[in-house]
Length: 457
Image (cartoon, rainbow, N blue to C red):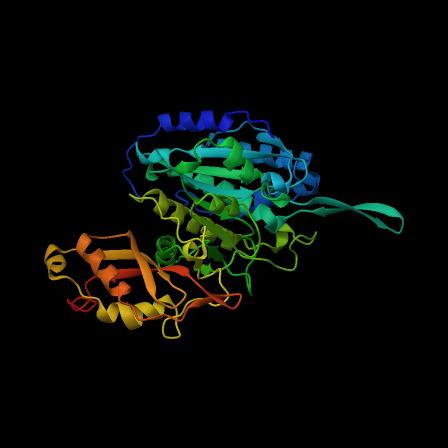
C-alpha cells in the first residue's frame, strides 16, 4: 500500500528523550521581531506560488521544491525535523471499497517537524498544527490552436496556510520552553486528492496517534473583507474548546474569529476528527478565485495572516499547557438499534429546543434559576465550570446526564439533579421523524461582583 520508511516513529521517540526543561517565563510572540511576520509570510507565499513550481501538484517536481523549501525554513528556525529534506514520500493505490478516501494511485510526500515540550510527562502528547502544501498543478488549454499552460498557483489555497505555519513554527521554536506538550508541524501532500497525506500520516506513518491531544488546521486563511471573515470550526459540540477560543478572543488587540458551525470544504482536519481527535480549522472561507488561476499572492491580507498566526500560537499554547487533555466533544453515534442511536444537534434537520430556544435558553430559563450553590461548597470555596452532556429523547425527555469535566462531587451532583429534572424539550427531527440528540452545557459556579454568588443559593 505504501512505503513506510520509519522516519516519523524513530524521530518522535528521539524527541521525547530531550523533554524535561523547566519553563520560567511567559510566551513572547514575535519577541525581537519589530517588523512583524508580514514580510516573511509574503516572501514564503511568493516562492510557493511562483510559476516555476507549476501549481505544486501532488507528486510533481513543484511539490518537491515546496517540500525542500519548507524543510530548509523549519530547520533554520530550530525545529527538530522528523522527515528527510525531500519529505516522507508515499505511493498509495486503493479503491473506496478498501476503506481509503481515494481510488487512484497517488504519489506525494509529507514534511514533518516537532518542537518537544518541556514537561517530562506531557511532552509525550502532541498538538499537531497542519497545512497542506499541494495544489491543483497546471491545466493545458488550446488558444487559437496554440497550447498554453494555466498555472493554478494556489496563493490562498493553501500557500497562505503553509507560509503562516512556517512562521508560527519559528515562533513556537523560539518559545520552546513554554509548551508543556510537544508541538508537531505537519505539511501534508495530496490534500487535493482526498486528504491522502494526512490519511497516510495517521494510518501508516506516525506511531503515536493516540497521544495526539489536538489538531489545528490552517487552510485558506489569506482573504479578508466582506464574507471572508476569520472563522474557527471545531467540528462538533466541544464546549471546552469553544470556551478556550472565546476566552482568547477577549484578549486585548486579539483578532476576533467567528465560531463557525460548518467547515465549508473538505480538508485534513477531517481525518483527525474521524480518529476522535479534537480539531480546529482556521479559515477565511471560500471566494470566487477558489480553484482558479486567479488565486494570486497580491490578493492576500498579510496583516491579518500575522494576526491569525498569533491566535494559533495562543490556542496551541493554551491546549498544550492544560493539566488535562481536551474532551473530544459530542459526535453522532449509530447504535446497533434505534434506541441506541443518537445524533448531534448539528446533524439533524431541526435541533431539539427548550422553550423555543437553544442550550443558552435552557441555561437561562431553567438551569440557573433552579440551581443551588451547596453551603458546604461555599464554605470550602469551591467554584468553577462544570461540563455536562445529556440526551434529549424522542419524546422530549432529558436522560443520560453525565458530567464530562467536573469541579467537585457536590457541585457536579447539583448540576446532574437540575438538568435531570428539566421539563420536556421539543424533540429534534431528522427526515421528518423525531430522533434522539446528545448535547452539552457548561454551568458556572462563581461569585458575583457584589460579593454574592451569581446563581441562586
